[in-house]
Length: 580
Image (cartoon, rainbow, N blue to C red; front, side, top):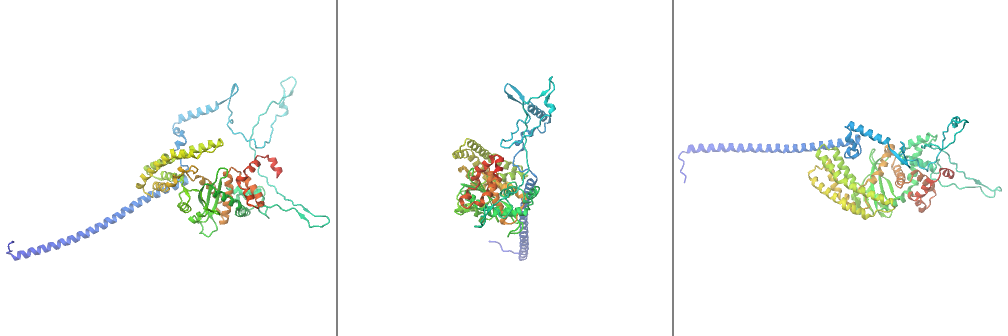
């Protein structure tokens, strides 16, 4: 038990002192709490600034990558080759002038001293011995350059006498004659009885593709071929015709093309579309197109869609106009009169095709070239050596070997075709399963390892993300030997349209765009089937007006006319002219 405090005053002072200290402590605690709250706010602001700084740095890197990519696209080479030394091994000698000069001199000397064995002697090879001979099917025009009469007399003998001709030297060169324009006069005799028992009878007029116009099938074929095969705008075709004193304005030519493409050849296009729906697989791609007059805002993108497919000898390239690249808009190209398309689909990574394939239950295949392009962009635009190394590894160590295996398959296919045989699909399956599949499995493991640690917005992150999302479609070709590893076939076909678009720039309206698409379809279908477009168009425009049944139109499809057109090409030129 504590002893009672005997000094009340000291106790009161003690209590007062403790109360003062308590108040001071509470004030200090309050100040510390306020300071702690202020520090937390500062720390929170610091974290926010740190995050914003990190985003700014990442944004800066991404913008620098985009600027480098745009510069490379605008100023750089379009090739995706990895190293110039791989394309030209002699580049390593560029800084060894002495060795280079010696090598060039040795090569020149070897070229000069090349000899060809003939019988029991040798003679030096002529400079143009490697030149390809002019084909025999071209007619020859003989132009003789003879000696003057006085030089054809022997003056060494006692009695001068004419020299004997023992041979001749012939030099062949191509001769070109400009086109010649003539006028067809279609004469229809009229007959009448002298006694006037009946009304006069006039021979019926043959059906023509453009009645009441001055256009013959040959002229229409020339204009169509000039624009849709050679890529010339119609005003330049008009200027070219004016050089031969034919006055036809670009507006007139445009009207002819719109009527033919938008109306006359539609039955042929419909049958080609039906044949495409019977193909086992179909390529598809699209490219922008400018339309001057439409319901959309000025400058809005419209599209031309290309579909490709068909077996050898019946290849089909089909173009169509599309106002907007929506899922419903693209879906219409897979719906035919007999129902939806039932084959396999090959496309790029556009997600709308995934939705269409899922809805229509199509087996969908991806494009390995698009995957390679993503990694090529990462290698080209990144400033980080590690990024360039990883992107190059994807291209050279994984994607490149797969394409080399596909090259072996194409070489085998060519060998079998030369023998008149078909490459067994089992051979393709075996090569892909034994060689390509292990490489692609390693590639997938490599992607899965790098993807979590790579910024998704960077060029490398986009490439890895694209490969990861598209992976089921990228490897599906392993089990389907008839399907290629990429969508390059449709890319090559749409490139022709894009090249022509640089010359004629736009279409007037939607109907003109579809008319152009139809004529492009005919021209490109001819080209992929090794048919000369002008010859086909000339025959088509001449015989299409008389086609009254589906069978007649079907006989005018490009692959059905190949034999007839080949025979016309082989016929002598004079016979063709006499037939006309």
